[in-house]
Length: 238
Image (cartoon, rainbow, N blue to C red):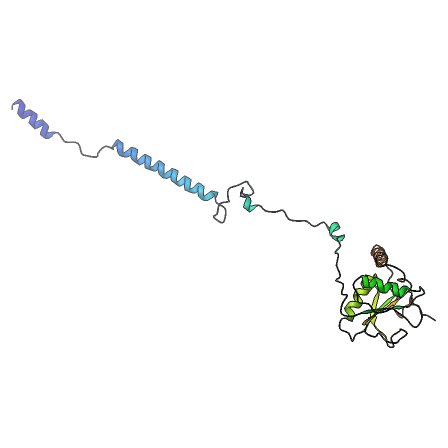
């Protein structure tokens, strides 16, 4: 056998290596990279889920209390009322004066001569429609009384206004017979029976006295309750 034949026979008997019997270095590196990427992505997703609250909504950006820097969302503090200040707060009520709708006549029911005429001019200056003053019948009065004629629609409102201007007098319907010398009101719807307490005084003086009496009544610490009829504290005139 020649040398060429020996070489051919040796080559024929030698087994060729199988493909893929050893791992490819490129494929192994790619697998490792993909695995690392999958782990990182999974970690980021898990971290995002755990950072959410129970409702699945993240808190808005801001400080630890959830407050934001948006000035349009500023919350005003709750107002706390001071009970002391609230208890001393007073409300001023303005009473509208009604001077038209009925005329007024002043009857002198006191011991001061000419006081009915003076009060007539005073009330006329305040805007009331006045009749000529007259003299009252019966005993003199200490406290003035304002009467009104219920037959005249505007008489009650005017009577209340006269009573208010003069410091808060009592108001009632005119009695029968009318307690004046003529026995009639004539065209008047309001009758002022002028007593000693209001005779010869100006409107300012009467209102100042009324304000002082009101202030004194509201500052009294103890107010005596009126005696109940039939009780031991009730007294009778004899």
